[in-house]
Image 1 (cartoon, rainbow, N blue to C red):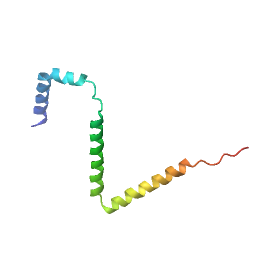
Image 2 (cartoon, one colour):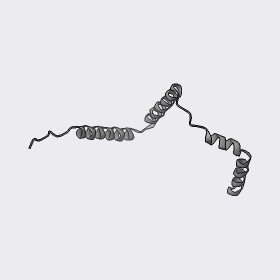
Image 3 (cartoon, rainbow, N blue to C red):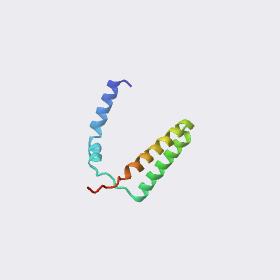
Length: 86
């Protein structure tokens, strides 16, 4: 389907379904339920587990090195120099 035909199709679709589209846009965003929140967390955990499984040893080494540097920088920034009474 070329761009012009797709544009015409989309315009016709919009005209015939305008009421449904507008109603869907007015709906308030759904609130998170504990079940949906937990499902999202589980999906996120699985995504990162699969990502870690696929990474090469070099990528793993780089990721861990960056993590160590960030931890070291965070630790150093949390140490405050002693106050000097003048």
